[in-house]
Length: 252
Image (cartoon, rainbow, N blue to C red; front, side, top):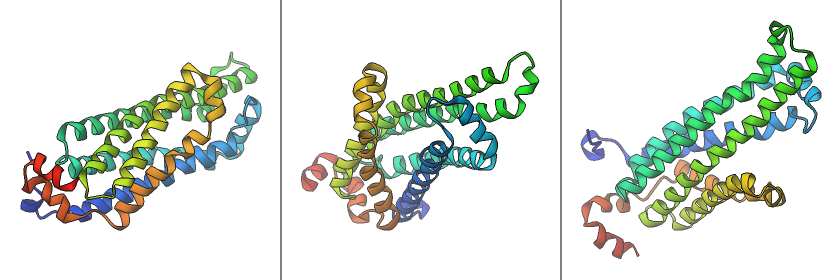
């Protein structure tokens, strides 16, 4: 069934703002777990101190995990609304962006199992009897490191999603083109960081975390713009009112 905005009385401006709010929520919840909770509890290279932090601050750990899980829910809604708004620009490319976004969400969601395993091992490890505490700590720390690997894999698909979305924004004309450029650059940074971490870890270590800082302008600008301004409804409607070739020439 085709969703007809005019027939169904749905405002594209409202959907754009909801899309932006969901994106902002995803940025905040993801940053809380990955940026704050992990940095506060994870002690690089020290499994015993890391597990002790998790046990001491279980509430913070659970809040971070729940926020990260909620981010995945927000991202699903954001991907769907973006597709509905930008599919008229290029349906194939919008579908590719949606599919890559969903793949990234799926990988990151499954990867949360690795993120929760350390708490289970720390609180229920006694049930494994034959495994000594130092071994449990080492195993818990390994799961946390594996979560980082899963996140890097998800960056491949998120990167493709943002590069395709950036092109759609740039071509559409109903959102400032500079935002499309910034979002495309964000996607390229995610994609590059992911592959460099596996192919050239020494080079990636020199670029990190600056390569991820470059992702923030694109993601923040599209989220803030959509949440506050929305989109140019007249130009958005023009994409179905005229032949695509003629419209693209006019917007250019």
